[in-house]
Structure formats: C-alpha cells, structure tokens
Length: 636
Image 1 (tube, rainbow, N blue to C red):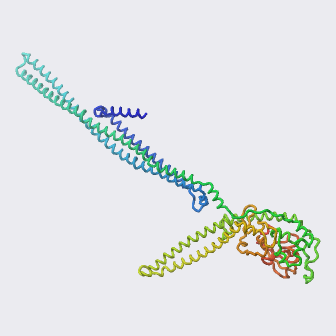
Image 2 (spheres, rainbow, N blue to C red):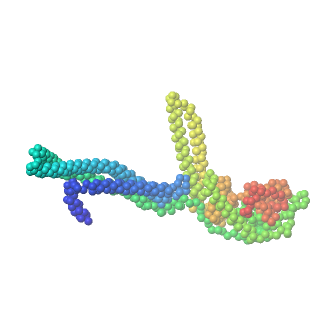
Image 3 (cartoon, rainbow, N blue to C red):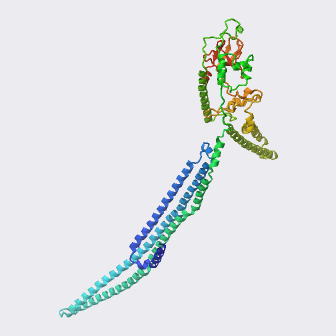
C-alpha cells in the first residue's frame, strides 16, 4: 500500500507540474469556486480541532472531579483508612489520575495555541490574499473585454463606412453615366464618393489599429497576466494545503508530546498497585484493633451445694470457718473460692428470716431473736436465674453506654476507656502532639528572647519591655505543656508496665497463684480490665485510678468489681449485732447507705463505708430512698 502511495505521489507530481495559468486559462470561475471551497475546508478543520479541544477540557475536568471526589476528606474516618497499603495505592492512583487529567488540559491548550489560533489568523490572511488575486483577475478580464468591445466597435464602424463608400461610388457612377445631369452634380457626387472612400479608409485603419492592439492585449492577457495571477492563486492554494498538512501533523505531535508523561502516570499507577502488601495491611489491622487483653481461661466449677447447705443451718461451711469473728473479718478476710460479685452477695446473704423488731426499749438483749416461720424461704434456683438475667442486662447496659461514649467522643483524659494496646497508642500520640506544641513554644520563646536582646542593645529599634508579656504567656504555656507531658508519660508508663507484665510468662503465671494457697486461681476471676461477653470493654475507671496493691490480702485479687451504687439512706431504729455471714452490725440511730432494697426476704443490704457492707433486718431500719438513683437498681 505504501508502494502504491509513492507511485501515486510521483504521478501526481508529474501531472501537477503544469501550471494553472496555461492549463486553466479559461477556468476563472471554477478556480474562484474551488479556492472558496478550500477556505471553507480550512474553517471546517479548525472547527473540528476546536471541538476536540473542548472535549479534552471537559474530559480533564471530569477526571479531576472524579479524582477530587474520592480524595480523603479532612477530619474524617477516611484518613485513618490510608494507613493500609491498598488505600495508599488508591490515593497514589488518584494523584496520578489528576496528573493524567492535566495532560489532557495540555493537549487542549496546545491545540488552541498551535492550531486553532494559527489557522484562524491564517484564514483571515488567506481570504484577503484570495480576494486580491481574484480582484486582479477580474480587472484583467474586464480590460480584455473592453478592448474586445473597442475592436468590435471599430469593426462595425469600418463595415458601415465601407458600405456607405460603396453606395456613394455606385451613385457617382450612375450620375456620371446620365447625360441629363449637370456637370456640377457629377462633380458633387464624385467628391462625395471620394469622401466616403476616405472615411472607410480611416475606419479600416482604426479597425486595424484596434485589432492589433487587441491581439497584443489578448496575447498578454492569456499568456502573461492571467498565468501570473493564476500562478499566485495556485501558490496560495498549495500553501493552504500545506498549512492544513502542518496543522494535522501538529495535531498528532500535540498528542504524542504528552504520551511520555501519560506513560509515567500509568507507570505510577502500576507502581502503586505493585506497592500493595497484603501482609502489611493485615498486620496494620492487628496494630489498629489489638486490645492487649489476655484470652479468658477455663471457667471453674462453682459448687452451689455449699450455699444450699449453708441456708439449711447456720453452722454452714462458710459460717463454720468464720464463727465468732467480727463481720469485717468475715466479709473481707476469707479465702473465697469464687469471685466476690453479686452472685456471692446473694449466696452470702442470710437465708434465715430476719429477727422481729424488739418490743422492749432495750432491743440489744435479743439481737437475733427467734426466726419468723411466716417468712418463706426463696428457692436458690430462682435467685440464680434472677442474677443471670440481671447480669446480662447490666452487661448490655454497660456495652451501650460504652458505645455511646465512644461515638460521642467522650472519654477520660487518660484514655482508660480504651483497651490497653489502643490506650498506649493514644497516649503516645498525645505525647507526640504535646512535644510538637512544646517545641513550637520553645522556638517562639527563643526568638522573642533574641528579639529582646536586640532591643536591649539597640533601644531605638523597640522597647524590650514590650516583649515581656508575650514571654510570660509562652512560659506559662510551656509549663502547662510540660505538666501535661509528664502526666501522659506517667499514664503511658503505667500501661506499658501492665502490658509487659501480661507479656512476661513467668510474671503472668506467678500472678495466677496466691502465696498462701496451693490451688491456682483462674485468670478471668479477677481481671483489672474486664470485657463483657458481647465484646465491649468495661474497665472500671475508679478502680484503675484508686486501687492499691495489697499483696498480703488475697481477697483483693477478686474484689475488683464495681461497687453497687447507693439508692438511698437508712437510719437504724434498733441496735443489731450481725454475727451471721453476710450481715453487718449497727448501732441505734446510725445512718447507713442503702445499696440493695428488700427483695421480700426481710433483709436490706447497706453499706457503712467503702470496705464494710452487709445485710440488716428491714424491720430494724427506716429507709429513705433516693428517687433519682432508685432506677439504677433495675440490674439487681
């Protein structure tokens, strides 16, 4: 095909070697039409390039909008997602796509500058040049037509004069032959014939002159003037075609010029895709959501038969070991085989009916009076079912509260609402932010100090005292930031210490055993940080902040559960000596906090202080419930 095209080009060169002036000398009108079509073609091609430029601009705008649409928004959750390699690769792809759109804008700009503007200017020049050439051609055509008209006019005049001279000659011959005509008439006719012959001769000479002139002008017109004009028109047309070809070549070059950068953009997208590391992303998930908790251990057997035997007789297993001891010793000094919680409080509560209120002024003589046979004994299974139901409700309530607090962004300053690992990261991030702010303040202080020194040395530049208020303010900010930094570092050290203890197998194993006991205690019986069955984190803030280590008190390893909230107060009407397990003694007129109301068994659970709580007979006290806090007892 290329060979045929080359032979066609040579043939065209050979055939087109002829000139328009000689080959198309009589095609003035057709040439005018053709050159007009040529200008329209250039205008049409210019319009095509302009529309292509508009398409490139529109495409680039849509690509940029698409890239902007999927860019991460500031202060949004999407920013956290870009810690994964796949998300970062997507962000790199968006950036490369934005550069890719820029190359299409470059195409549109170059098309406008190098083709549209150039062709628009050239079309105006082409129209002016064409107009000038065809104006010269029309003027030459008009001139030859006028010369032809003059020739025709002289020819007709010569013909007329010849006919008149012929008629005058015939008239003279007729007069001259007539004998009746006078000699004067004959002379007059002869003179008239001679005059006509002279006029005809003059007309002939004029005709010959015009003929010679016309032939000369016609030869000059068709062999010199018109070829010259048509040659200029031919050159104009060839220049127009060449300009269109150059524009088409420029059109291709404009697109080819951006190909290396477009290729780099595509290579960048390929490299972004190659930078995705699934292992790193899955590891980042661990870093993001690792809580630092230890998996729960085995659940130990809870022998409820012990409490059942205790409810039958006061000489139960629990009571036999603590017989004759004060209530404080009974409630806090025992080695509980189970975690002390609401279940143990239910099991440890007096199963016997409370003593009736004394009728004498000195009720101390009968602190534990005869049992009331009217009080039915509540089955243990009912109380266990009630506890299990209420426990689940309490955990759901805590989970809901925790979720709401996290969503609302509320939480303690020490980030104790977070799991240990996440808390460590959060505290470290806050320490880093504080250090950045501290460095800024220090830099500002140094700069102001230097400025003050300059003012001191050069008083005309400024007042040194004008810097003092700002220095004082910066100093206060630095002190505050340093205090905050130490505070967060303390909390961070606490978290790292706990994580180190959990990660050390020897220390973790030693924490599972008590120095005074040989039976291992399950790890999940006394967690400092608790996790509910639904996965929500239920760490006790007050316990974490205020709980002190008591290595000599074994029971403290289990007593980490939230203390029951108070639902009111009570005033003792009679003294009561709580000698049974789960009871607490009280003096007449003593004020106590109510933490659990009477459930129908005649006993009310009260608290004296943080460490002393137990059951007292409901008939021995006067209860004042707190209406605001009473609703909190729905979990019991």
